[in-house]
Image (cartoon, rainbow, N blue to C red; front, side, top):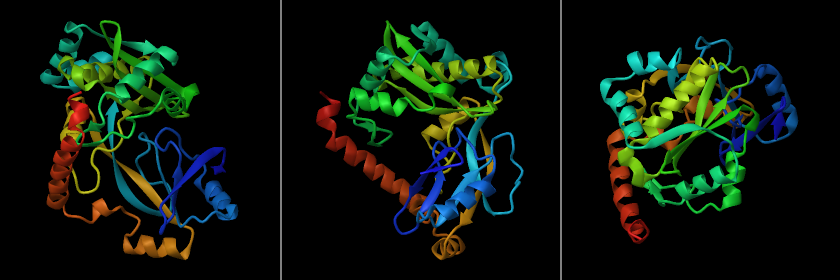
Length: 297
């Protein structure tokens, strides 16, 4: 459904939670107007949630609020990032990538790029110990999925010997005060050449050249899981945890009860971290065995 010129998505069956499609890449300028439209829409929505921009971290609205965490990098210049915001190990990884022959540059969204992305997606059915949800997508599905926000997107490719080995889809918000890494994926087989580090470096350069103040890389932590390999990678590349106001507005009695009882959070927020860590280890082993015939093909 569309509200105030922006698409709204709804998740959940028992508790229906609505949010802005592309949250973090676009924002509501007038939440009150959006809420009035949602109430009149007739759609079954129990809760509506939204956040503020990275340059606006003080709560501005009177709705029920919780603090959300974002992984964000404050950007001034590329040289400042290289010199002051990352450590020597990460600097060496960026330089190692270039010395290994990896070339990064902004690229057009054309059939050549889509074909390269398609190959990256279909390299392995497993990433980070779980099924990779882009695996198995055909060429046209890859085109459709990456063809969003085209008026505010920049694509960056990492190439080795002329072949795409990694890419970034960088999306700016409407005010061009922040950009988000909507996609950043590299070939696992080229991990020794550190293409992902080079992609981050070029994303910083692309933002600095356009005067973008913040680069956003999703959440720093999820649920009770505060440290993992991805969070460490973000920290090593200069991203810091920024607390942002997240608002929850109940639109029904179910929404009010869910908010009061804390049922608007996922199961991961209720399960102790040692239990979820054990589950992740078991899941990693299970999927590695399940798809071993494809991994070794």
